[in-house]
Image (cartoon, rainbow over all chains, first blue to last red; front, side):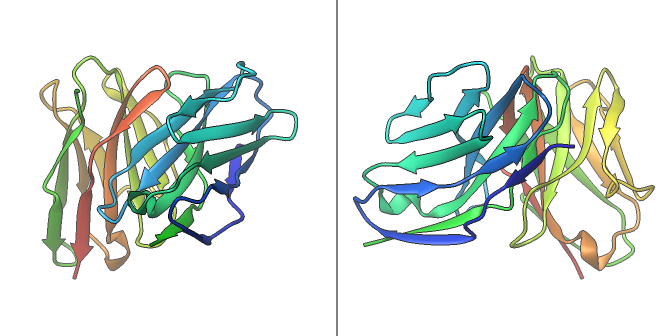
Length: 115
Length: 111
């Protein structure tokens, strides 16, 4: 069975700083996708970034980038130039490359951006 | 941009009552899901639905839960006799390949 582990329950950084959220996962699959979802206080689930396991290049979306280490089964999220609006819960997630498979979430990291 | 729509956004019910949570998935999606999140906890899978039948369900999804796609557009989650521990945010999601889109959730409060 797949598992996703986020070892940082809570983090705080100053606005404009860079912050890295950690995620490790366990799977025997070779093809899969990894995601970071943001959940602001509204509790909506917002997709931040997606990584295909078969791609060596790390995904980037504006200020958000990942460090994907397939052999180490590590998938960290880096937020550059952090903004107050980045304050949220962040969930790392995994899905096998089967069309109907369920997504597995980590327990989340609560990120506070301080003014 | 197309989105998954959930109604109502908040539902308050008495313990033992039946509730139906409604979702309108994105129109060309074929796979539908319900997830729940108890306050302060992680998002948990409940059930996946494809081709008008359940494809997978978790141990949480017991006989009190059922899902239905009554008219080809709506996707509903029914809880027959709610318990206090059913209080949670319920998310509907639909997918096209690996792109999973979540609705904004229904906050269910069981009193």
